[in-house]
Image (tube, rainbow, N blue to C red; front, side, top):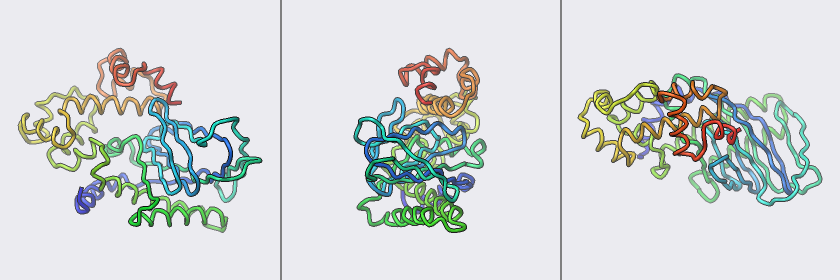
Length: 309
């Protein structure tokens, strides 16, 4: 996507940018350690900013992700995950102390080699803005060695310094810096043609964007290809070509994938019944959703929910 196209898409996402950041933890760990993060529920995202060393993030059923100094991980849907050291062994005891409204977490009797910040973003219009659902399960920015992303590194340092200083207003300044960082992360992600998110790719085209927005606003509807073409103000054949061009799949395949993605997010981030989730995402019954989830993820909805907790 060109810079101009990314700017236009950001303008369309103005409601999304009404967010409230929360800085939860400032972590300084060494040796063998692990930190479990529970799901935060609908509307909350979680983020980690590594300022020194490296760590591993594990998400149930989705493999692991290594983060190094300068890396920023955003989990837009607040999924359950585990952050741990690269080395195994008996986990060190972690001491906690609250300072300036932020929990300071440090491993006991271990030389510190990894530092990172943990926090959350509350999307204030999560239920009303379909673009929330367009964000992928995770966004990772690798800033180390990238001159154009030096601003990310400066923001990371400024946030850490504000939290370390503990002066009056430091928590407010750190939160505002985190908000700016989120907008910059989103801008960089949207401008990256290699991001590979089908929904975002479809939102870049006016024809397919009409369909995606309509689907996200009424996911429970029994959509047909004819109805999608009517929304897009085009023919069925033209709509299929547009979806294949921008997402590499047919409209009905995209719809099925989106329903399962949203179902997985609801299973991980809410306590809603499986039957309710099935109805919200467009499945006729709990059994129909269960079969689809099993085909996609290899687990029944209940087991998938347990794995995500």
